[in-house]
Length: 206
Image (cartoon, rainbow, N blue to C red):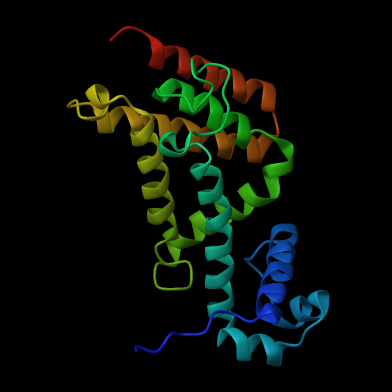
């Protein structure tokens, strides 16, 4: 029988969740193990033992942030019934790109999600300038995750059309640009109006 690697201990899970809450509140750019350990009731030695290095801990925190992102996306998965949406005839996830942009933006624009989204923006930017560090691949992975979800929103005729990939790439670019604007200005009404305009363009006859 092949060996099965043991999963994380309850204490490791507890410390990771506490470190994740700390990262949401303080960011990762200037993360130092000693203040983090003090804040979560541990020690740098224990953190080094559990994650091998500071970079190892950062990678674990980025994976934890991605779990939150994928949990949200999974709730929009048509195969699973999706999140309830008034614009969908059967009450399930929207089956068009415009509806997906509306639903995703309503989540991104919610004030309670700002800490996670600031952490996402920080990790996205760092992965572009430090491709060999613990941030490696984060930006590309998040692009792939979101494009896959947007593709799942498109009817097959649109998804497989010559401009299908371009349309979902444009939708992602609008969402990402609007998010960065919102994080910079906190001007939610203006940014939401811009997203609504883009949604109307997506719904315009082709």
